[in-house]
Length: 445
Image (spheres, rainbow, N blue to C red):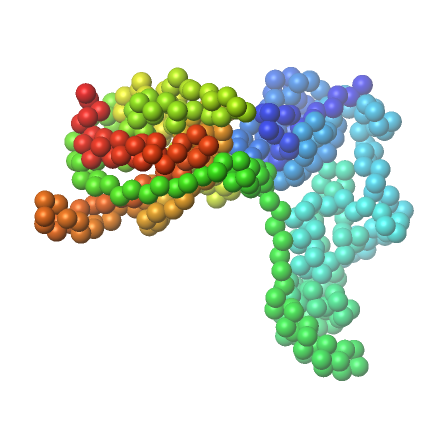
């Protein structure tokens, strides 16, 4: 019997995954242990190896589709073999929701008649494109798995003259049943072309005016990615779980700059550039060991004190935010922290982080200084108890020994869980961090 390949559950919190890439097509031979597809979750991108050897009989999803964990994504067996549990063979459609009655083909289009209310199998992107172009999905032939209509099918579909319309023009033409083929002269039809062609007998002036206003405000929808949905869920959880307070303190970064300029060139890995983030991570780890109740997490009525400081650094991506953490920063050298941090950042941007990189954090640093943000209130990364926000460095007039001087000042914003970290402890933490950052040679003591 054919074997079912399902969407794997790659973590305790994973509920769905996105098919990022298929390495095999229907009819291809695949061996056990060979990479079959690539899946993207809310945090990671993983290559999934086949658990079976055989021929790919069916692909139940296309690239870009989001599939729930344990749902089928493919069937592997021998050519012509019956697909287990369906009673059909590889050359038959496994989706019994799509009931095709009759197919009429012409030179310009393939029109598929379906029973009223029957399901049209199409990808979300294909549906969006068809809606914008004013196409009826029931008239488009699908070339994807199981006859699924994919984006390229909509792109290549023609209505007779290969009419090109703007999304707004397509919307109006569809609503008022305008013959776009009669209007088409080779140039893309715009909203004004459709409105100008509509006679008073077809629609009233007031209707055209209303439509003209509405058409200019066509709304688009975008489905949240698994990563963005997870971020939304966890931020809501953090907001409702931790009674938080943010404490702000300005520090003089003159000594940090001097330290970086002197120590940076001595790093063992000359390709790594020492940054303020690396110094902050080392300093925070040092202070967290001095104040262990901050390097902790709360589980029910039990406070768990962690033996080492695993410092997470928030990494912003186009798709969302990841927080890989560097383990044991309290016992690692500044050079080791720098190398490991840059590895995590590169892996995050390339989608190559491991689960170990993402779990086990005890404290997080998030730096928006590069974007000119001076101060902000970061949200705690559960189940941690605090997070440190770092602002931009700006030359600022300050009073030193009774004189006004210009110093490079930076704001630190500590958001702390007030269930465990009260104002006094938070203030002591910031004070101690300031002492180290304004005199980083204390790290050598």
